[in-house]
Image (cartoon, rainbow, N blue to C red; front, side):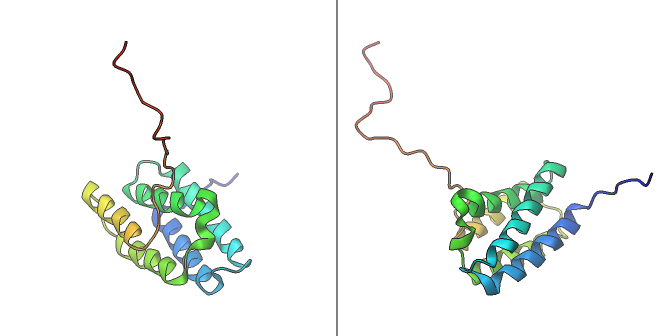
Length: 132
C-alpha cells in the first residue's frame, strides 16, 4: 500500500492563490461560491495539518473574515487580489510574530474584518456590583 504524502503549507498556499485568482472575475455572482468553497476547504486543511505554522495564523484570520456569515460574497476582486499579493510575499519567508501581526493588519487594511465575532453588551446592564 503506498504511503500518503501530505502537501506542504507552501503547496496549500499555491492552491489558495489559485482560488483567489479564480474567484475575482466572479465576485458577487453565484459562480463565486465554487471558488469560495474550495478556498474555505483548503484553509481548514491548513489549520488541521499545520496548526503551529505562523502562516496558518494569518490564513485563519483571513478565514474568519470570509467564513463568518458567508462574508466571502461581500468582498471585491481587488481585495482578493490584495490577499493573493500578500500571500505571495509571505509564502517563502520565515515569519516572526511581528510579521504575523503586520500581515493581519494588512488584511484589515484591505477591508477584511479579521475579528468578526464581537460581543455587544446592552448598556443598561451593569457588569458587577459594589453591593456584594
